[in-house]
Image (cartoon, rainbow, N blue to C red; front, top):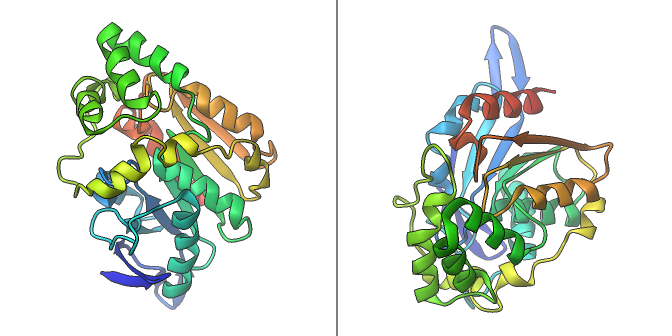
Length: 282
């Protein structure tokens, strides 16, 4: 399905009802909006079918951000964390979604954080998963070398140090992407590749390299769950430590996964969904 948001058609899918009927009782359920990572390389499908298991406690909304997956590109082909964040508000306004829970993984977590900063009264809860608020290249390179040796450090450095071109990112995908998860790979081969968006986010001078909203995290007001894996090379656990240190401790909950990498549910599915379920229900 598509809906027009801020002049662009965004593709989305929905799993589960917003209202559950049991006899004569109608119970409204929370809406969980999922934001994918790696703009241009990833889309909503990375969450399927794993996140179906939460459909008994929330209505699940799978969203392709503008310029990603099956959603339209912007007319000028440029993107920003702020634009994607504002689209969440427009998307909810168009569909009548009130006080959503917004989960963002990796780059989706960057968008979710900026959304919480810019619109602090809009979400009911946030989940910031395997993400960062400021790119620390040296921290990433150290972690890639720890997991994959000097070759991984070189490949990651070519892509991340100042933002690599297409050739450098192809080398990164070959050498570094298999290091993201200790137990099973993240599958993006079924995602729709959008080269322009990927370049605008990852390339030289792109969004990833300009991003810095670490100190602004103090503006978030809603309960916020941070998920991080100790073996994550691309958003190392130190990035989550930094984020939690800048969130209001009254609203922050931090769950570290010692045996997981990027997207913690790929390595520790049972615990990850227990944590998510409990956070949604409380």
